[in-house]
Length: 208
Ligand code: PRP
Image: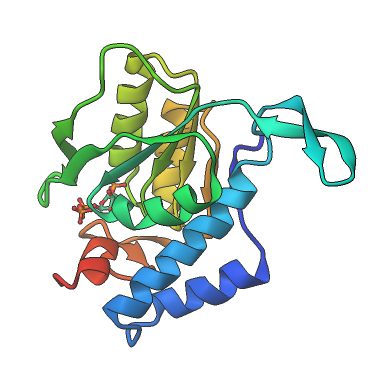
C-alpha cells in the first residue's frame, strides 16, 4: 500500500523552493507556509466522504455533494500552528485540537507539554499538522495520542520529511497516509533535515 504522497504540483514545488531559501524573511515564510498548507490540504482530502444533498439554484433544483465528516486539525505546537489557517480556509466542519510537544535537544525524543483533548472523540478524521517530519518521534507520539483518543482515520500533513521520519511513522502507523511537499536526503547529527529549510518554528516566529 503506497502511503507516502509527495506533491509534484508546480506551485507546491515553486513555493517550497522559496521557503527553503535562507533569504526568505519571516513574513514571507509565514505566507508561504499558509499557501502550501492550503495546496497540500486540497490534495490530502481527495477521499473525504460526502453525502448527496439537494439545493435550489436560481434556475431550479440541483443535486450535489456535501462534506459529511467533522475534521479535527491537530497542529503540533509550535511549528504546526502555521499550517492551521490555510487548511481551515479550505475545509468545512473543522475543529482544532492542539498538541504540545517539543524535541529534547539531546535525546531528540518528543516531550509532551499540552493536551486538552476531551474524553471521547468529537471528530471522524484527524489531520496532524507539522511542517517537519524529522526523526518522526513527534508524529508517532501524536498519532499514538489520537488513536488512544479513539480516532480511526488519521492523516499526516507536513511540508518536508526525512527518510528516517517516513520510515518511523510508516512502521509505527502503516495506516496513516503521509502528505508532504518533498522528502529530503537525510537528517544531520543534530536531527535537522538536510538540505531542509532550517528550523520551521524559528523561521515562522522570528525566534531563530
Ligand atoms: C520540530 C518540528 C516537529 C519536530 C520534528 O519541533 O516542528 O514538531 O521538531 O522532529 P521529529 O520528527 O524528530 O520529532 P521542535 O521540537 O523544534 O519544536 P517547535 O515546533 O516548538 O519549534
